[in-house]
Image: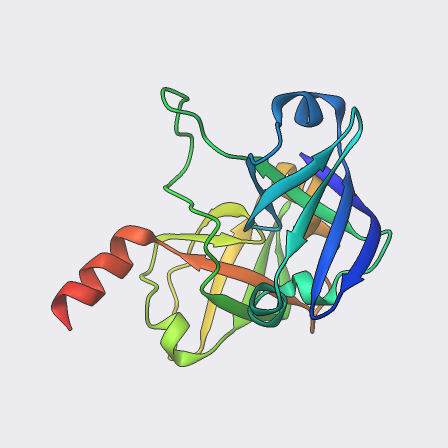
Length: 189
């Protein structure tokens, strides 16, 4: 679902985010529940019928795009997957590995190819046609990779129902690479 940052409260080096959300999201949450905001797993610290609050620590603000959010910004929301729920994509943990910058948008009929640039240690975790999560959206990596560049293809539905449709060239997104690939890389190294 989509949410909107209603209020940001600075707490020393940390920040509390009050996020307005659809009623079906609010009613599915409880205090202490996990929810991903633009792909970043956070813990619900306060809740009402139309919003929830999370406390983002300084490290989270440093390594994700949450540190750049402003009041009024739209965000992608996804509650934690419950045991027994259907898995419609790949395993996404909400543990962001880094950020990448949108460098190009190229139309291909009704779909759009988004080209990204990121650090080599992050892009090296990707494989053509493998899984990637951008701002919490499960996607497939395009066929062409370089040391620092990759692309994804977005269909009209994804462009309409996520914040990715509003992303501008030069903006950063949160990146989570495939957990299975990370385990294989670790084992082989």
